[in-house]
Image (cartoon, rainbow, N blue to C red; front, side, top):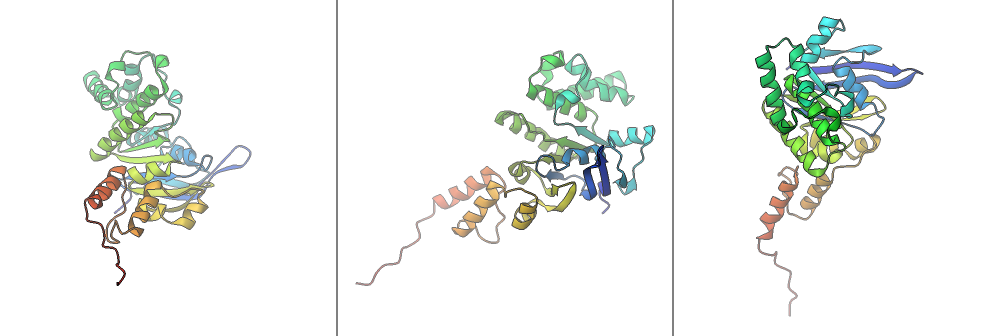
Length: 290
């Protein structure tokens, strides 16, 4: 099956010949969530800016459903309708005087009718639980509110692929959980997600696929569990294994999880395993002959 989005041998350098990407290859599959994992400064944001056409590579190309993308104004317009981007710092994306005006910018520029544009805006605001902020000036929002407005603006465009740079950065626990719930709903509705993050625990719990990233290159890509459990690869990427992965290994070592069972991916999975064995009778202890 043809991948929905591909980066093929991308190379990019910033002024001063600072390497951003180096012969990078990446594959995004339709309907899945891909986490691009790497330490700060490894080039994750640079990659996202290439995946929606904001930056043009020095060499290599991006493919959308198997076709190389172009950089004319009309080609970029079509590309960005299909591939939305939410930056880490929401202030880089908010510019309208009110929340509703900011979220409506994208749908309005799609040429939608006023009625259809308003419908998309309302749906996006409700999805991000910020409908009550519709008339609020954007400069009067908290950091977390700004981030949700920026995501609502991208959601209102109804892209096939949504790229998010460090989506939970700066959010408290409740804000992060709500955002991940919203992203889960978008994925269930058919949106393909790509998250750039350094949070291995987030990637392990939420993503289907993982690409380990460092120094502008993908070191390895595949299903989340085997990639994040590859100790040498994780060391090369300057990352540590997820806590729940390590706990799953301990549960197996303690006999609480069979080798045929999948490792727990969420805290709820761990609690179920513990509860299941908490009601089991204790194992008989060996007795000494008298």
